[in-house]
Image 1: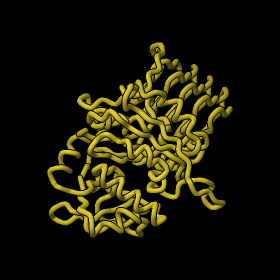
Image 2: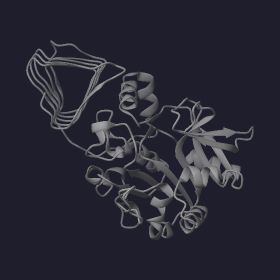
Image 3: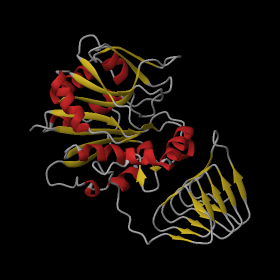
Length: 370
């Protein structure tokens, strides 16, 4: 069967998201008022005509399981194929790993039976911590036209030293792969890879036989000289969510009209779990400017430069500025909140004050009362 099959990785990994991932894996972190981070990669796949998607999970995945459900919100609830949730477990558990996957190859090795039943000719592998709207169908067409063994999506925009970087020759072939570098140089990998089903199966089987587990080291670096790996440069908006500061900055980017138009392209819509709510009420007498406000909110205080999720209440006399308030947060009368990320069901009591900084936002844990 021609076409692509999607595999998304969303398991616990070493990040600096703090309390935002205390009770969830990184793919289920809320983003943009109405979405979870994983929604964007799922939507990319659906918009490319992909009908079969496997999500490899591990760790605190209850939030992800609740969010994805049967996949019906992405038209992936199907009798054949559709969305498959793969809460696999590492086959080698020891004190050092705590049962965590050592790398993507090990994660894929734990779902070999699933891989053998892939019906499509090509497979796209992607992380769930990338917020972007990319035409994967165009990437596949470029992959086929180039004759590459593997196509790796990358960007010329700068990244962090821990990221993966490619050096491309004039034809677009990847000639060098580096990661954990002191001075980033080259094209930053967006961790989106397209290859044939047969190549993926062969690489995973060989890796398991040799106890190799790391995708970057044992595939990208070790096979760079033997496989025809090519880069697909994507310089549109692409946000990596690895730290609290990344999350805050990339969320605040959504307040820019040009970024919103780029990310929420009507030709490639972003789908999310439906959550019907009443219309938001905004008191006409208060200041509410340059903010994204979801349905079901009650805004009777001032809100500036903020992202407000569903069900948030801002009472009279309260002031919210440069904040990200998750679902069902309450800011009571007279409270002042600036440069704060509040997880779900947080309550800011009357006349309290909490202030962070744009370069050091304060994160308030779920169900806290301040």
